[in-house]
Image (cartoon, rainbow, N blue to C red):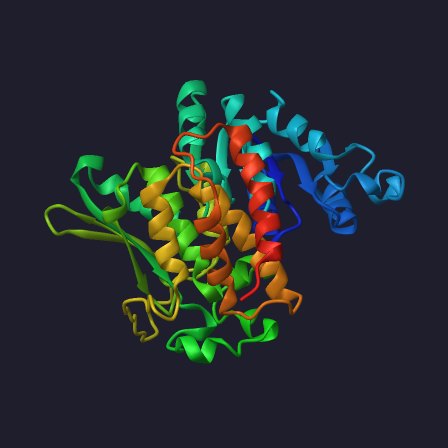
Amino acid sequence: MNRIAVLGSTGSIGTSCLEVIGSCPGQMSLSGITAHSNWKLLGQQSKAFCPKWAVLSDESLRNRVPRNAFSSRTELLFGPEGIERVAGDPDVDVVVSGIVGAAGLQGTWVALETGKRVAIANKETLVVAGSLVIELAGRTGATLLPVDSEHSAIFQAMHSGQSHEVRRVVLTSSGGPFRGWTRKQLDNVTPQMALAHPTWNMGPKITVDSATMMNKALEIIEAKWLFGLEVNQIDVVVHPQSIVHSFVEFVDGSIIAQLSPPDMKLPIQYALTYPARTESISPKMDWSQAMNLEFEPPDYEAFPALALGIEVSQRNGTCGAVLNAANEIAVERFLSGDLRFSDIPSACSATLKNHDFDPHPSLSDLLKLDGWAREETRRWRS
């Protein structure tokens, strides 16, 4: 019985994860759940699963949340230290890292320090501190398993060969809602337009990242660290149907892909049950229906975020922390009407260029730069 803690249980990944856990009662149990401030949904989850802990990281809620909103069998904790307690507790076997943004780093770090299996949906952890995270996992014997559909697909496809036989991996992208648009057209994109994703149902930040293709830039960086690849071994292709979730090309020319309907429950379940495969509640392919699968190269001119992902993957050091922090603030400013959509990658690029690059930062260095990059991006004007 895997005892699982879900960090970020009220988000899109977290709620899908709880669906998976609920569908596998003989294989998994829910030990802990966390949210930032959505205490009503967290309370509902507590009553449905009766985990040992529920955590609200927003300290201001400590004396405002009714205790009867939660199961009497659940201990209610507050603040970031509550997340760390759950992530590091010996009664937890697997930690699902589903908190969006750099805020997810600390809980993931504690889970890795204690040698756990970490199902990582928080790509920012590896973007911000990839080399340190991989080194820590190697030192403690912790296991990192991808939950992102693209990286899960690569992980599954890589089982068809040896790591030295991989020529390249290709990350697929739906292209978001603005596939085929020009850079000039993107100047007029509104938040409402950017939040209308054609395929996936995600939170606002990730949805905007998909629209700018910054999500794919971050996934390039994540793939580098997860699979020990060089930047020239990672490509991106636009695939609007989101059926092929990514593929691996081997040195003999063979290409192995992972296909399934676009639904996050499948990669979540695979990360939780690996190396076993079990029956899933995810939708299945209907091969009785005709379908077309399209692929096209991305437009680097219209979506300059992709080039930032390549640049950061090449330079490493402090670049990932700065890019991630700048993007979080730029997206926040766009959603509040303070930046144009096309300004998001421009603001990120400017902040990246202005920072004091360090090729070998410590974790504390990265956290300081995270704060600096946020303030720098808040001040940026086009």
